Image 1 (spheres, one colour):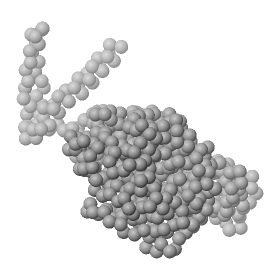
Image 2 (image 1 turned 180 degrees about the vertical axis):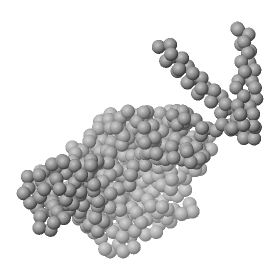
Image 3 (image 1 turned 120 degrees about the horizontal axis):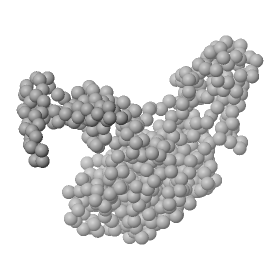
Length: 541
């Protein structure tokens, strides 16, 4: 026991000596010898001389990797990425490894993150046929003695960025766990005299657009805000329009310098906000109130009160595409380059495949779909009862991670243990009590093929985060989940399973109708005729 303890003391002394030497000589690259330090012990009157080291310099990179990782744990992720990471090849290799960032997250937050991890193929070797990526053709090679095999995604996605995720999680938690000191909160109550139904932050959180039931469109320049100014003043107003929209301004989206607004007057209008000067570019008339908008360059998708999804290219608006997938009005729309996703009062989520030009999937949830946030491999949904639902979208399967082809070991025409290369093709699919897919399996020998069917149950993960009303606003990032509810509350949550509340914000006396989050800035709209804004104090002069 004494021997082991003495060895540990020696090891500790070696580490301490190395740290002391590092502090002494790190900044003096020209010094060839160390200064001798003398110190007197007041109690024993013994003097200690430090070791005089030779001309070899001592650098931080000479430390054991375990010590470097321990030192890095006291630094913020952003400092490691922006400074230490770029110092030398050793640090670059150490902090480029996704395992470091994944472990750093798991040591601080124990709950599963991200909620859905990429499905594992086990020991199967899977290759996607790029020419058939939209119909799901895969090549699969046997590499073990399993009697069942599992096809993976129909379209590959980028790997999860653990380094970026770690930085975002640490920053969101640090800022919002002490939001009273890290954020400057104020309310805007000028520029409208009726309930505010929508807010939208764009251009990296600099501009805030608001739409209200008095038919007013306001755009605020948050860069003009100063902490010493009165929060009720109109000094932030960059643009105000009170005449263009003839109905409630209900939905907004943006792309670059262009802002899109939708109204109950059945018009979608595009506004140019470049150089701080706002001007209307064009307008498009539909035959229904516009309740939800998704907007990207040369593409607009709108959810209507008429229960239809309307899609068109603003350069050729006469070529409308209309889809009818819901039995009740559409309340929210989101999407990306592959899909347009709609949610409605009928408790249904419909996913439209833009490449195929048809519905890809329809999913039922327990409540009315009030809000959605899509991206980063997840589809978050807020319902009319205040519950959060999450679907896995990282592989474009929307939680078909349990998709399995049937056990083919009993087939006489196919030996599952001879390492044959198989081709799997989804021939068709039907929705009858669950998704029924029909697969064509073909071996490398053309004479051997068979048909098989597999039933797929779509799983929806549900969380209760304490809201007591309709979940009217929802935004998620790698760092956090932001929710707004008709119970007048706004919450900041951890983006993990069973998400814990980082902050609960009370900014309104009426129900929160919408929220927006962009580049660290949070905004909320309310029926109490006000807009709440949370600006990071580093942005406030």
